[in-house]
Image 1 (cartoon, rainbow, N blue to C red):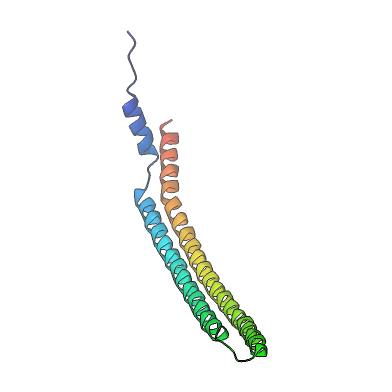
Image 2 (image 1 turned 180 degrees about the vertical axis):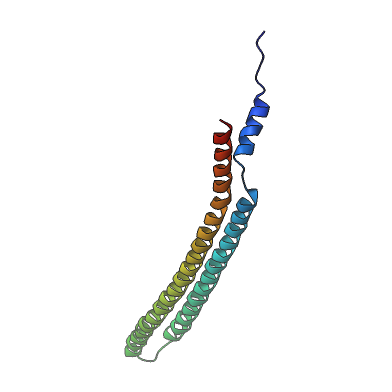
Length: 148
C-alpha cells in the first residue's frame, strides 16, 4: 500500500526554516496606531480652529448686517450703509481667508513632520527586522549545504 506523507510535519519543518518575528509586526502595528492618533489630533485641531474662524466671521457679518438693516432717516443713508457693509465685508473676508491660509500652512507642516518622522522610524525598524531573519536564512542555507 501507499504510505501517505504527513503534511503537518512537512509544513511545520518549513515554517521552522522561515521564522517570523511577530514582535516586529506588533511594534509596526503599535507605531501605525500612534501615527494615526497623532494625525487624527492634527485633523481635529484643524477642524476646531476652522470652525472658530467661521463662527467669528459669521458673528461679525451678522452684527454688521444688523447695523445696516436699521431704519434710516434719508434714502442716501441706506446707500451709505450698504457701501459701509460691503466695504467691511471685503476687509473681513481678506482677514479670514488669511487666517484659513495660515491654519492650512500650520497643519501642512505638522502633517509633514509626522510623516517624515514616521518614515524614519519605519526605515530603522524595517532594517532591524530584516537583519535577523536574513541571518537565520543564511545560517539555515549553510547548514543545508553542509548536510548535502
